[in-house]
Each structure stands twice: as C-alpha cells, then as structure tokens.
Length: 130
Image (tube, rainbow, N blue to C red; front, side):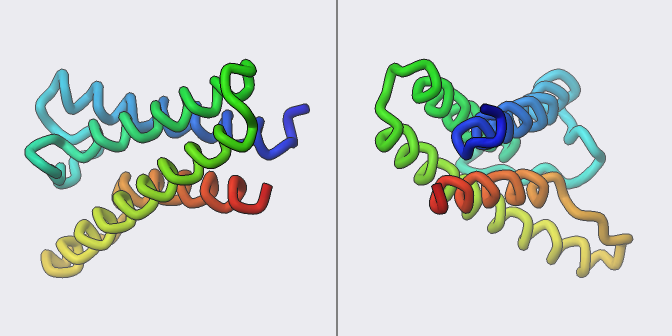
C-alpha cells in the first residue's frame, strides 16, 4: 500500500535523492552551484555531495527493508538516525545561508538546503511516529 509509512519514506527518499543528485551533478559538471547561490563546503566537500550521500543512504536502507533484506525495526532505526543526521546537517547549513542572505541584503529566497531539511525532517517524523 502506498500510504503506509514505509512507502511514504521510500518515495520521499527517492525525491530527496533525485533532487540532491541533480544539485550534485550540476556542481560536478559546471563547478558552480545549481541555483546561483553560494555553495557551502563541509570538510572540503560541497554540501550537496554530502546531502546526496545521506539521501542515497536513506533510500538504500528503505529499499532494503521493503525488499525484505532487513527487518522493519532495523530499517526504521537506520532510516531514523540517518535522516536525523541529514536534518541537523541541512538545518545548520540553512541557518548559515540565511544569515549570509540577510547580511548581503539580497532578496531572501530559501536556500536549497532548506528543502533538503524539510524532506529529512518529514522522514524523521514519519519514522518516529510509525
């Protein structure tokens, strides 16, 4: 069933992986941020690469549970902790991006990290309530 929590998490993970994958691909090919915003680096790596890796890890964990390679309890725990790390990671980047927007007095538009934060947070909440 598509409305069970595991399915919702799986489809959110697909969406997050595709979105972060697009950002990472543009960054890799053009050496610029996809949406003409600043490109934060973490540990010397563009943040979109780390976001992609986190979403991909959630997707793999979710898929392994759906395919029966791991128990539902184990899958839920792994997805919860990776998504929590992703939510905290992207929230921190979002705050930094918004601060730089305010200091530069440019038009404030949500940075791409904020969208990743929303998806990771949804996954955390759904997994915690399931």
